[in-house]
Image (tube, rainbow, N blue to C red; front, side):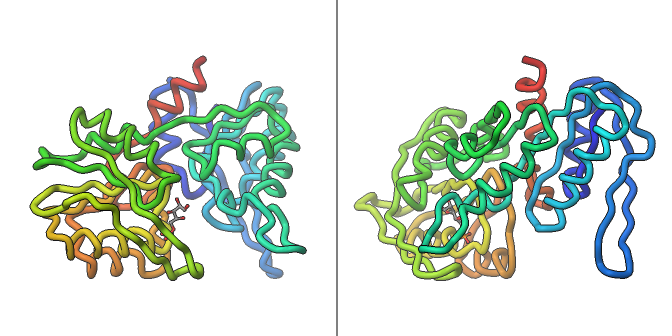
Length: 283
Ligand code: R5P
């Protein structure tokens, strides 16, 4: 039986349809002291697959409650699919006295599940933080599907760390060059981008990244490209978090369109990762 987190309902329904499995209904409550309750009163199965992106603190509490609820209801085997794993970017202690937050949440999730499935976590090494087996789904290639026909295309990552995503999207599109910029992050919202030597004049450019959070990285990269005479600039991301004023920043920078998946359900979630997750679950 599939159990959806509140922010992954469409994706879980698509996955249930791919797998031909029933979908549980989750019920919610909030107590006067602010505590939340997520329950699955109709759960009645030996196996549970919980699908919950954790883009907020509440989503993590909800996930832990759902894991515990299905165990209480008799599930013998629990799989936890985290399409977008929040806190994954806090994968090291940045200063003395800081936690490794990704490890802390991974350990908590591991206590009540037998297996975890992640989609393009910030780094694949995040898998080592869990105490149970982890499968990683690479959904980057899906981002090529909604792209129109491109003129002299360039697939670009805003930093060297995301070049794999640019290459995967280019391969899925079928043609084009790849390249990357250099990025220095000065704060949570301040990013400095240094362009490469590539000529952008008149070209269609697809900037690819694992996540658009505040949009600072993408909007700075877009501005460099439009200043350099690029024709159309598309932003393709696996996780369209689009926090704060990300959309405004991207619009002001002059993008053509944002393309994302449904690991975070947004109006730009043009492609579903459900078939790719189903493939991994059926292995
Ligand atoms: C960083 O390494 C990531 O790949 C993204 O580039 C970054 O997290 C995006 O964040 P923002 O949209 O806030 O610039």
